[in-house]
Length: 175
Image 1 (cartoon, one colour):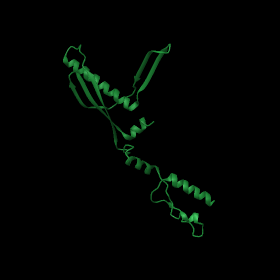
Image 2 (tube, rainbow, N blue to C red):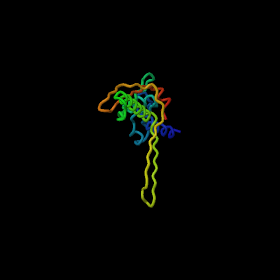
Image 3 (cartoon, one colour):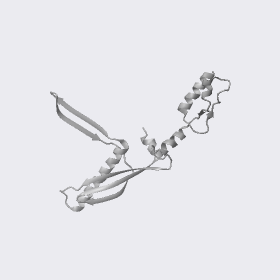
Image 4 (spheres, rainbow, N blue to C red):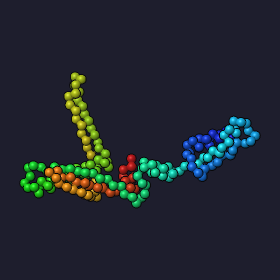
């Protein structure tokens, strides 16, 4: 029985972590042999809860802050080129802007939902005949806002930002 208790306490000491407020094991008895008195220092065992581990991980900057009122911010930059065959410069500007916003939404969706990549290779007579790779993004982007936009030399650039509650993010995307 005493041997099992020591084994359980040693395992707890190894896997339980170390900090104050733990369980102290008694010092070795004076009547025991020299092998037992060699380790006469107290062994401290502590039960570590999940919040302590989360705090340590957060301090090491391995996780974002975990507060229910915080917002996570995702941003993307979209670019669109003005087509050459437009009726006016205003139409070219409007089409470039639409392309840039669509590109930014696509990039936000790829950040939030991921990208499905499919590939197909055709080999004949030990030679590659054709290779096709397709990338597809499917997702719903709501409440994204344009932060910055500019038009320079036919290229329209848009910065888009999406703010989402951290708890909502965990509900929707934690997988």
